[in-house]
Length: 146
Length: 264
Ligand SMILES: Cc1cc2nc3c(=O)[nH]c(=O)nc-3n(C[C@H](O)[C@H](O)[C@H](O)COP(=O)(O)OP(=O)(O)OC[C@H]3O[C@@H](n4cnc5c(N)ncnc54)[C@H](O)[C@@H]3O)c2cc1C
Image (cartoon, rainbow over all chains, first blue to last red; front, side, top):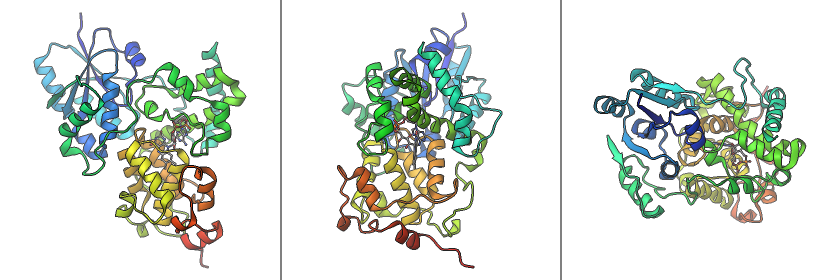
């Protein structure tokens, strides 16, 4: 059986999403990324909020503080996990950083399905966007209700 | 590399532990936890927070029926789609539309960020205030950081931000407009400050909202006066003219004072 390690990201701390997308029995890890924290200057409020969300997930999470590259490298050396997965962040700056690290350490990334799929169009002002997606949003919600 | 603990007797013990573990990375001030707990909110709590009909009527009021769920949305613990479904199930499409429209603002800003990642920290357009970008200050004045501005209501909103990490949308607009237009500080300094403190701090919604207020992503600058703050927040926030001297003026007077008129 393939053993898997999932590197969780701060924007996807949903128990249901993890249950849906991660292989059963995977080890979950979270890294408080020092470079990222220093860049965004997260206050203790934000760090504690994320920490509490992690502690409350139904599956235990191994929590680290450090540089993700070093931690992933060390795990690769010492552990028997064969497959590494992560979630693609929504924040473009975090996404760039995570995808660069993932690429360097052979970590596959998962993209949770978007609510509003509008990749092919470009909107500059909200109401143009709203007029196009409104029906989808309300219809989809209605479908889910029934 | 450090493995962190998962066992704590209570919230205070966790705070103390994190203060020690992240000491070198934390700013010197504001080293306390938020009163808002990051544990997974129950389905009952989420349901209770969504009051679409009252939301449509009162959302602009400081004490209005806003959900206060944004920190959980930011962490991906709740999806906006799920909130839309709850609203719809409660009151149907017509009465839920305002709430769903606001949820879609979050999706819109994400869309803009994906289309224009270059504009996350750069002015998307020139300021429409009559002033060039270089004339704005680069850093936040100390009195703003310390919640010691001449205006009681602004200090109240700064305290909300820095103590709880949550701020009502209207208060975010007031604070952003105060920073950029009344104090003429670049929106980037304010946006970074919000991202430091807001539990829902999201670069797309935050930075483009700051740009919208500043007028670098929109047709005109957003401003407010004391009368407006009193109307929406006056029952809880000190809005007396004598304790808010910079804000007590008509819109006409503020436009003359804050913006440069075209000369030609
Ligand atoms: C200067 C400024 C900075 C902001 N920074 C952020 C930020 O960092 N993160 C953030 O999520 N929102 C931000 N907003 C938007 C808005 O203020 C917050 O989403 C809202 O106040 C969150 O509170 P709530 O959950 O009670 O909102 P509700 O009104 O109950 O809305 C429910 C959800 O809809 C979404 N939403 C509602 N209004 C907006 C909006 N105008 N723009 C984007 N999404 C919206 C949020 O996900 C919110 O949780 C900012 C607005 C301004 C003016």
